[in-house]
Image 1: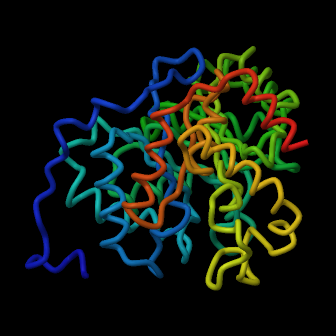
Image 2: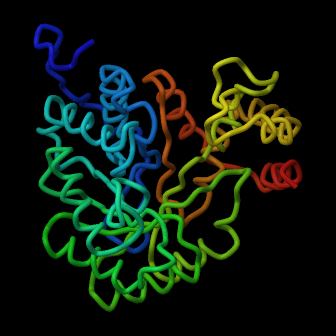
Amino acid sequence: MNINDKSQITTYQASEQRYDKMTYNRSGKSGVLLPALSLGLWHNFGFVDNIQNGRDILRCAFDHGITHFDLANNYGPPYGSAEENFGTIFKKDFKPYRDELFIASKAGYDMWPGPYGNYGSRKYLIASIDQSLKRMGLDYVDIFYHHRPDPETPLEETMGALADIVRQGKALYVGISNYQPKETHEAAEILKHLNVPFILHQARYSMFDRWVEGGLLNTLNKNGVGCIAFSPLAQGMLTDKYINGIPEGSRASKSMGHLNEDAVYQNIEKIKKLSEMAKSRGQKLSQMAIAWILRQPQVASVLIGASSAKQLKENVIALDNLVFTEEELQMIDAILN
């Protein structure tokens, strides 16, 4: 369906019950409350995807109290297309609800050719936020992230650019992503000195990837910064999809992707045991995996992707059971170790 075909358009009215069940957590020591689940537009929102399906997912998310939509300049494919599609949907469905939404974008990975379309220079970041706002049809984003550390550009330049983006009214808050603890602390010190609200670190975190427990969560706590976790399902391994092998058409079956067959087969016994444990809790493995991350007090939100509104609703059910007994946590550690 073409979203611009007026004969196919229905006026969107958000559910009046959208805030009834969602849990909201404070991000660090800021004034911002984030939904326990946030929607990432990394996949399924580019020009190669069905925009009406993306529209259905966004509507479903907001109807369930998911107020935080997470984008980046290079999400697609092609680069920029997720923001452009989001802008089209925002204009048609969400403009009346702008003040209820917390919208993010980022810059730091490859975006355009030449020396100024990557990493963390002032030139790249300020050009990128201007492009992102134009694509999305927004006056500002709620948070703008530096997407990854730049080993060459001085941290003072990168953080200074973020500070100026806030001062220019193009973002309300700033964040960083994929930074190690030492770099995170240094960034926090610079931003504190610049009096800029640094409220979130977006980090990869799942049962199969626990690197943040090695110091980052403590660093964030000391600096009053929240964590938002991405890839909570380890690219789909922490679901029931791979219990009986690798299905045709799945992410692991494709040669170009972030998950390969070897990773699945190396973890298959753990996946089966965790799935059985999830059943004993009345959950699917994916739901338990999300709940397990949210047990961490420093985690304000878990960033989920969805290929359909049905899949998104399934993930929201994770919030019905967020409590783990000490015995359950020990059993999970035993399986993972």
